[in-house]
Length: 602
Image 1 (cartoon, rainbow, N blue to C red):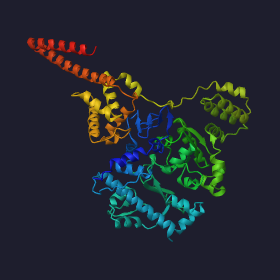
Image 2 (image 1 turned 30 degrees about the horizontal axis):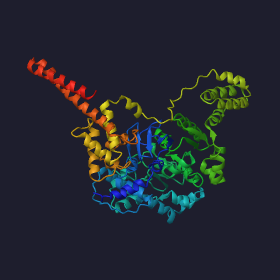
Image 3 (image 1 turned 30 degrees about the vertical axis):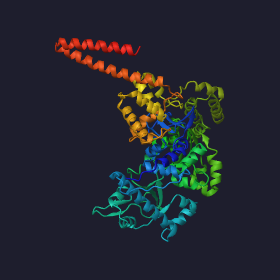
Image 4 (image 1 turned 120 degrees about the horizontal axis):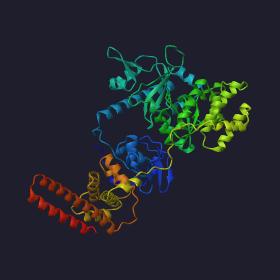
């Protein structure tokens, strides 16, 4: 097993880390009252139910139940082990520590295979980059890229490479290094022949490494540099557990910080555009040659509410931008579209005019979504003809009718009037005939906290056990006070009884009940989620013994009622068996139990 990290080191790192700062790297958070809210990174949602408490240093999703402290967030979100999460945060603090791990620690076969595949991909990434930058074989490809406007700094930063034309360069290297070639085939690096041997998937191509949201290289996209009608221009790694195009956004892990800083993301059509623009546009991402998916939108939406689309300026790029704009708008995001002149693509524009002008003249002057729609709907129409003007008007008015702002409606009606020569008043009258287009239901962006509603339907004993545990987790003294009051009582809910047992063991071992400290002690994600939910309850600054006694009283009452219900079941059975003597005794016992219960709880 991995060497145990001293508790004092874990505590020091946790206390020197602000959970809001850490989670803000992955989730767009907005302050609402005492807590911060955002879209949960663990399940898809359109309204923020994910809460982060800076006071308690914990997070909790009221939608899916995920919860924990800063360590468990990184473990659940990034797939880290506890050691990795502590080390990751330790590197960002001034806490000095060392620990080693035992390579014999048990790991699942799946994780072992994934690790081997990632190592194989990383090895080829280094090989391809070396071949491009440092060898004669890669000189032609390097010159091609430099002529396209890329510089060596960009090529090094994005680890761009070159694959040799030979059939077995990569396969022989992987075999020499001891990799299981069947696993490398699953990772999309090799292809298996009918005779059982393997050859390279990527040959004679410029290689762009593709990284996931964690920054791990999970595949490649290879581009040919000389036209070949028998070869696709781009060849991507095949779909695999590691490489899934519908959820991969090129440059996402690098752009995460800049997107939050700039408060918008730039969506490009290809990763060559991302690289070309990177000197002045660091908040750019691109899909992997696929349409924009719900997964892509959710990833972006966790960081920002605004997207600038910058696709190629040709007809295909314009059509793709129109489609993507509609999907982003339907998800509740603010959309702008940066239009390029004369059918150019971003790479061409930057090569001709420079990255600074691209940012200042194209990205910063992006059109609003409605302005782009009007331009798009006008394209190809002859406004000198009556049919062309009517067609344009009939296409634009339904779009204008969906706008919620009266000012926007007036602005675009005036523009439509200028474009067509039809009077503003006539267009305004015609607009009334259009019913607002049905849009996807836009859920309020205020935080959704169903817990407050749930609280009103909790039974008395359920409310009691929840608040007893919540108060216990606020301090060791309160934990001991509740333990004394509980005596031989147990929590009716199994999860809460388990948390109670672990909490007492934690305190007995010397653990301090500081905010977030107990959460990581719990052995599984389910219990951590339940415990985190309890710590989000609004509690009094100090709890009195009388309040604790009231909660204990409710648990005791619940236990007594259960005893009575059991006796009543026995009475019913005795009556069915015509056992008069037993039934009479049980009836008297039940009467006395109810009488005693009412006397205790007046």
